[in-house]
Amino acid sequence: YCISTFHLLAGTQEKRIEIFSNLIKGVKKDGTVVAIEPNPLNPFYYPFYWFSDQVSWEIEKTFMNSSEFNLKKIFKKLGLTDVEITYMGFLPNRFINSVEAVKYLNGFVNSVPLLNKFSSFIYIKGKKR
Image 1 (spheres, rainbow, N blue to C red):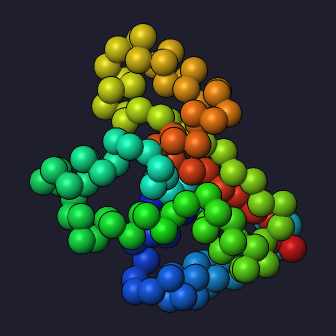
Image 2: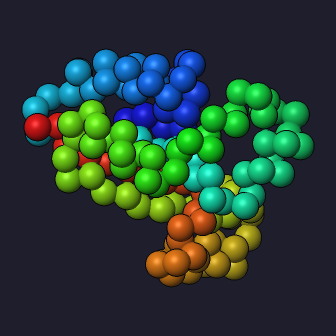
Image 3: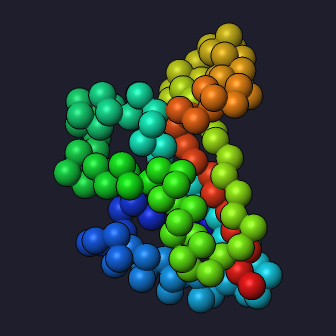
């Protein structure tokens, strides 16, 4: 598992791929590699990163490279097969956990095929052959 980490790995996209390939070396044959990354299409991330005093935009802005298409391309480039994408959590967790109706709304948005493309996280998995 790699949770909200890939986009923070040092340097360029090529360097992140190199580091991630070293992580994959530890996975057994037919093992599953899973990464959960922030979805750059989620509209809530930008104000959060820009106005939060808890995170630095300069560090976090690389999450914009975590699109579905880029992550799939990277997983395939690393030789992973059966690559699947799932979207998780449209609304930020702070809102979801506070009101029951918001939990329902979040679940509904995640179940609608076009709307779920804007969910907070991209869950990607692939098999090592």
